[in-house]
Image (cartoon, rainbow, N blue to C red; front, side, top):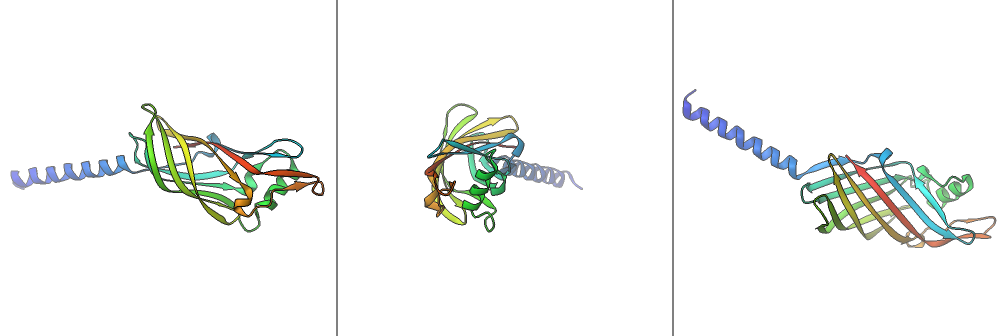
Length: 194
């Protein structure tokens, strides 16, 4: 092989390496770490306030640019029967209200990233629109959250208020209807991806 061809092949190999490295740097898919993530649903009732924790989550976070905190997409799935209040009767009423027999998961998928604003070198405010599906009903919602980069992991933190009736869910009742829950609930999350 002559000297000119060698230089040409070396340059081509280097260019291909740079191209591949750039693509890897600009599009990275990370997976949700269930054991290090939390999601709480809180609300009110005629008796007392209540909270339910999610124990079974999965999802992915795709970065467009890791350095600037720009995401390309994010998906989250919460198993309905993984929701836990610590009270068996309340769990049963929750699963029934969420129609768990036919709709096993609650899902959220980002469909549009509206804005990403740096708060520091490793913290960003991200404003998105996405599809939230609860009990088989899909609604397009806005969801804003803080993205924090921590070495080889990223954490999303935020909260969202919704009404159960917007998803055709009848707020659960207990003791023959003498205890009723309020329509409004707050979803608070701290979700880690690696």
